[in-house]
Length: 491
Image (tube, rainbow, N blue to C red):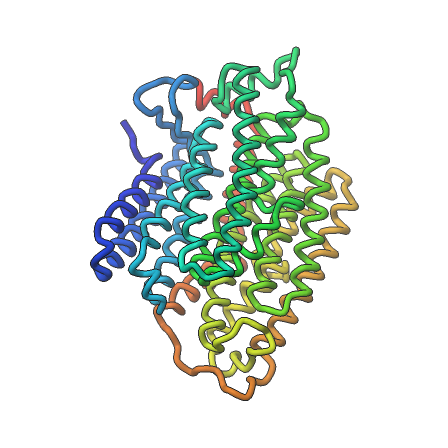
C-alpha cells in the first residue's frame, strides 16, 4: 500500500506529538519543530513529483473502497497546494525559532501550529465532504487557541470574533452536509458530482448551495463574512499571523474551487453570479480598507481580503481558463502574503511600534528588509513583472473571454487602490526619515533568513512563471474534467 498521499498529514501530526512530549525542554522541542518542518517539505515535494509524473494518487483508508470508505485523492491542484503549504510551514518555523517571545516558544505553540498545518493538508487531500468538515474543525480549534495564546486583550477579542464567525461557518457547512446526505445518500465528492447532475435534480440544491457559500465564504474571509480577519491577523505575533494568513483563507478558496467544479456548475445557475457579486464587494472593502490603514500590518491584512475577492472573480467565470488563473494566483499569494507578514513582524520589532508614523528610515539601515517588502507588497498589488501580476493577468484574460467587463474594470480599479496603499506604506513606513529615536540597527538573522528564502522564491517565479502556469493549467484541466475525477476516485 502506498502511504505517500497521507504523509503530508502524518509528518505534522508526529511533529505535534513529539513537540508536546518535549515541551519542558525548549531546545529539544525547537529541534523537533525544525526537523518536522524540513521533513514536511521533503515528503510534499516527493508527493508532487509522483503526481506530476504518474497522474493523481489515491489511497483508500482501511481497504474500504470508495464511496463507502475514506478516500485520499491527490491531483495536481492538491499536490501543488500541499507543496506550497509545506514551504510556508518551513519558513514560519524558521522565523519563530528566532522569536524573542520565550513564553510562546515554551508553550504549546509548536504542537498547535503543526496540528493546524495537519488540518490544512487534510482539507487539501480529502475526497469527501464529511472529512473536509472534520479537517476544517481541526484547523479551527488549533487556530483559535493559537490566536488566544498570550491573553492580551486584543488577542482575546480577536479570538472571540474569530471563533463565533467560524462556528457559524461550521454550522452552515454541517447542515449542508446533512441535507446532501439525506438527498443523495453519499458524501463522496465523486458520487455527489454524479448525483447532483442527474436529470431529476436534487431537492433543496439551491438552499444547499447558499449554505456552502456562507460556510466557505467565512473561511475565505469573503465579504460580508470576513469581519474576523483584520483582528485575527492583526493582533497575534507576526509569525503566527503569517501562518494564518498564508493558509486559512486559502482553504476556503480551495473549497470553492473544488465544490464549484464538481457539484454546482451547470446545476445552480446563479452560483457563479453570487460569487461574482461577493468578489466585487470583497475587492472594494479590501482595497479601500488597505488605503485607510495607519499601521503597516493593517494595510497588509486588508490586502488579503482584496486578494480573496480577486480569486473568487476567477472562480466565478466557471471556465477552465478562469480556474487556471485563480490557481496560479492562489499558489503565489500563499507565499507572498506569508512574506509580507513576516516582514511586518521584523519591521515592528526593529521600530518598536506598529503605526506607520512611528516607522521610517529602514531602507537605509535594513536594505534587505526594504527590498523584501517591495517585492512582496508590489506583487500583491499586481505590479509587473512580479508574480502577482501574472496571476491577475490570467484572471483578467479569463474575464474578457466570457465578456465580464464589469469584473475587469473592478479588478483594475481595485488593483490601483492596493498599489496606492502599498506605495503609501512603503513611503511612510520604510522610506521617510526615521523618527527622533532611530531604528534599532541589530539584524535578527534567524528571522531574516526565512524572509530572504521566500523572497528568492517569489523573485524566481516572477521572472520565470512558466512552471507555475504549467502546474496551474494542468490542475485546472484536471479540475474541469469531472468524468476523469469520478473514474480516478470510484474505479
